[in-house]
Image (tube, rainbow, N blue to C red; front, side, top):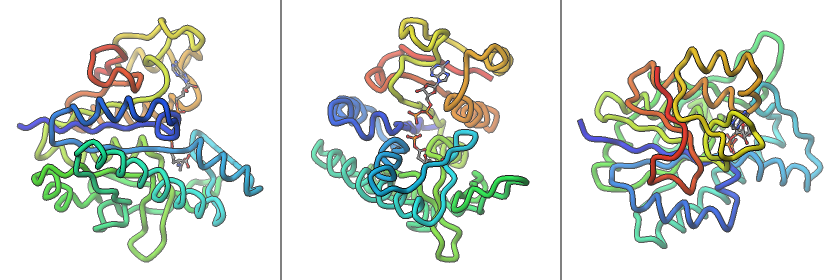
Length: 258
Ligand SMILES: Nc1ncnc2c1ncn2[C@@H]1O[C@H](COP(=O)(O)OP(=O)(O)O)[C@@H](O)[C@H]1O
Ligand SMILES: CC(=O)N[C@@H](CCC(=O)OP(=O)(O)O)C(=O)O
């Protein structure tokens, strides 16, 4: 089976004028076929603050009312996505920005939580992803770039966590490719001590993840990230790594095993 590289960058990279170019230089050097997924939570929060829109997060997910959704769409599917696509084009890489609504690639269902109304947050599954056009684009050596936006197929856009989008795409495309999923962010990997960049853990299996979570070593944003990462491994994704964006092309970082 052909290898497919699916790379996700967090907002701390997507929004950083110094780090993004270095990351993109490395990303364009990776073999085709490849997909880029990006977040941008920090940029959306910054714009919410400027506009006086309250920021509410719960379990690593943004409670997304109408004003917050507008900001999410503008920032993720608009400014950041188009900046990244232009920078890839500037590196002779033929990229296309696609929200989950484009070509109906990622249909979502409004998050249904027993006690919290998350607003316009969409939950997604690999079975619902329409891979036909992604495969056509990959066959043409086009690089799809996905922001954290999906839709309900009835005209409503949703905000969906970018780690989840990367994981679900990797699972959905595993029927045709040996999918490799890499989460890039601003730390050297999963750290034993959050204040020590040299304390990255080389390998974590699911049992060790539960133990590290119980010990409080893994917390906050790393929990939903690892949940989606292990879900991917359980559902046929070949390899999952978590690493610093600068280390995309080398082995430094945390490798996850089932
Ligand atoms: N053990 C850990 N190692 C590294 N980061 C951790 C750990 N536990 C919690 N975190 C937190 O998780 C964050 C990454 O999650 P998140 O902000 O969602 O990532 P992203 O930048 O990809 O959006 C880190 O910035 C850090 O604050
Ligand atoms: C529902 C939900 O929480 N969506 C995320 C989407 C952006 C994201 O995932 O950005 P990072 O990768 O930079 O964290 C949010 O609005 O923060």
